[in-house]
Image (cartoon, rainbow, N blue to C red; front, side, top):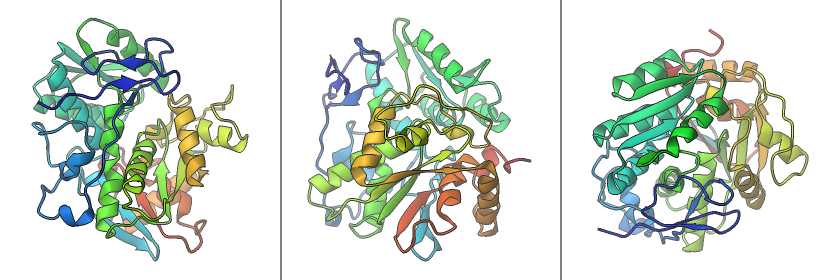
Length: 368
């Protein structure tokens, strides 16, 4: 069995052993990164491989998947001239979170905990519940009150125990982290655990393959906790470092105007979150994160790419959701945020890809 890479804290360099169940840096309690710098396979060697994200085996920190549901390899379709959409809502649990959840499930099988816990506003919880059901590991998912009933139904259907927590997304996270410190508990955190990011990065490896070894001028990505954006940054660094890209795309991060702590920090030129950011209601529940733990990394990744932050109102989300539906694509409100941000021409003549991250059946129409 291939040894697991160690983790380390990007803030202070503290190292955490590969086989540890520690979920954060023991010194600063921040999220961890993986000491793993793979070299992707060249384009010509990918033909004939398994038709899932596991075709990019050289870039993944775990080998030999045992709980795969065929995740990955989602279609890329044109929306307008120059802008295409990647249909990640066609994943097994109907959201892009399957990319990271499958790696967390494989990791837990290696570490053999007595219990798995997670916290989520919905999609990560449904993905984790599904993959841990397939792994035959007991799982508890903490969710904030007000989580979409359809997402709660899906989590429970997979056999996970659902614990609703009074308050918002941060309250659910705090409750989960309290239990995460108990003995033999694996915290399947899509925010703190770096394996999740090494799953989401396959989004970009797929784009690179589907576009014949290149990437568009701009990658437009929704940002709450930033797991898709940070995964994208990892993949771009891997491909560029291996000489498989001649230029790196700009990362455009999209937040809901009602909950936009990173966009505000960006506007103020800050390297981390500013002290007070207004928080209001939004239909984009999946990106309504007031204090993302990886804020510094997200801001740095956008800055280093030459990108920027965009915000969208709930009115823009509603119109974009109906617009996509009129094109045959029924996407949840969070999942349409990127299209809402760019569909009226802010990118000019630059080429771009937007992810459609979750199925509309998970939430219904925004504002309805």
